Length: 108
Image (tube, rainbow, N blue to C red; front, side, top):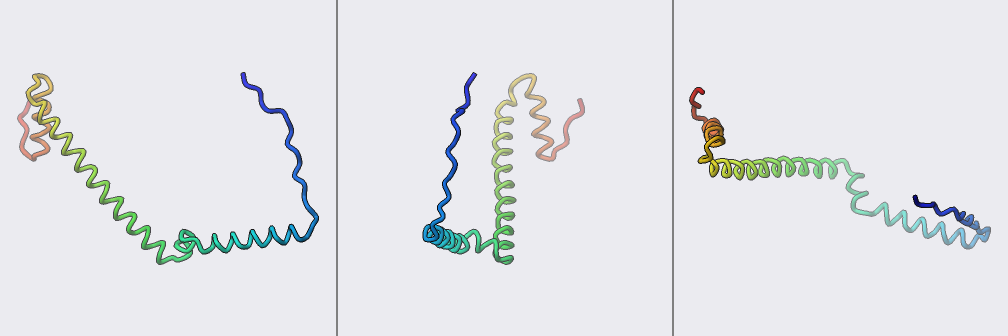
């Protein structure tokens, strides 16, 4: 059983010095200006850029899915074709290959 750290955190001291507050506000303003000019923010501010980005993303996702499925299925068919000689599984695999090739399967 682990024990939690029961030591209390010290409260943050707030400075009332206006020069520190002004410096902090200027630093925050500078960072916000940098952030508003960031590439991802400018893309999402433009409807046309976002639409184009999402359109191509969808095209490449579909293309990658189709290519991946083709590679996996061709590998699976190759493996199935290699185990055709196994007595019990061989007939079942032969029927699957015939069905995929569009040939008629013999009645059992």
